[in-house]
Length: 210
Image (cartoon, rainbow, N blue to C red; front, top):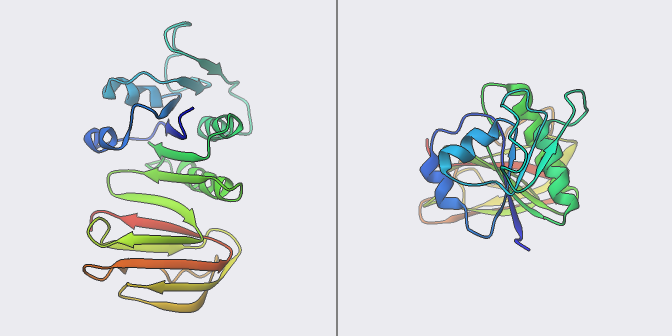
């Protein structure tokens, strides 16, 4: 079984070449409702289609490998359902596209999907043409790829935070969810910023473009 699940949600994707460069033939591909548009534009066939299809025409039966039709009245968004479904099938590595955009409510919900995965020992990354988002307790950021990064606390209090190899270092720091001061740090030229969190977790946002 492929070890990575790639999910396409319905927000805009502006750089399909970047998306193509990240996907391998072994990835398990899921599209969520209008995320099917992205797969069509990429010329790829999803392994699973999920959704209530309120924003895209419901696919014809038998056209794709597997289809899960969801009710429109439900607690989970289509994207969150897809994450849970893949997790229950054994996937622990997730790459999610089309998850950030004009609908800030959906964007925030998708960010908290990363926290849901982290708390269950899985890795989740949301990617767009500018940034990659991941909930971490330990990570490195390479200067040649990501010149900027931010650390945001989205739940509780993160303690014993250490940051090195960056313009703004930190030793045994603490970031609470009601006060964010870890925004817009810079990786030192030629170095890798090292981040560790002794207690709790942080949302790491790695920025490819300034």
